[in-house]
Image (cartoon, rainbow, N blue to C red; front, side, top):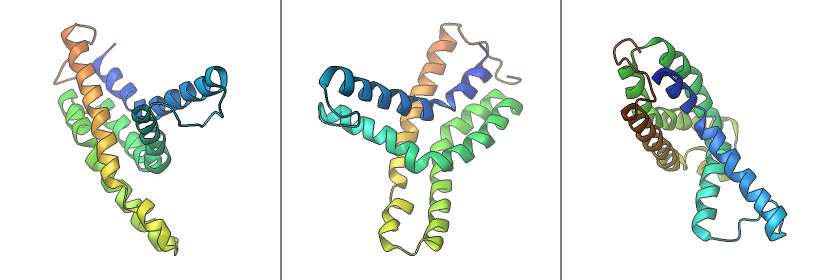
Length: 156
C-alpha cells in the first residue's frame, strides 16, 4: 500500500470507528447482556469513550465531511510531506469549520438552547480530532518503519 492510499483511507476512520463501536455495544447489549441496544450502562470509561465517538459524528460529521472532501483531493495531488502536515493540523481546520457552521446555525435557529451545540463543543472537536491524528500518525510511522508502506516524501 502506498503512503498516499494509507492517508486517504485514514480520512474515513472518524466515521468507521464510531459505527464499529456502536455496533459492538448494540450487539453486546442485545445478544449477551439482554438490554436495549443503546444502553450505555456498564464500564463507565468505555461508555464515555463510546459516547464521545458517536457524538463526534453527530455534531462534527458535517464540518469533518467538508474537510474530507478537500483533504482527499489534497492528499492525491500534493507532496506527501504536505499531506502529513495537513493531517497534523486537521483538527484545527475542522474546529474552525465547526465554529463557522455553528455561527451560521445560530443565525438560522432562534432557540437560545441551541448555543451549546452550535459553538460550545469545539474543544471536543479538538480532543477527538487529535486522538485520531495521534493514532493515524503513529500507525503511519510504525507501518513505514516496518516497510509496509511505500513512501516517497517529495513525490508521494
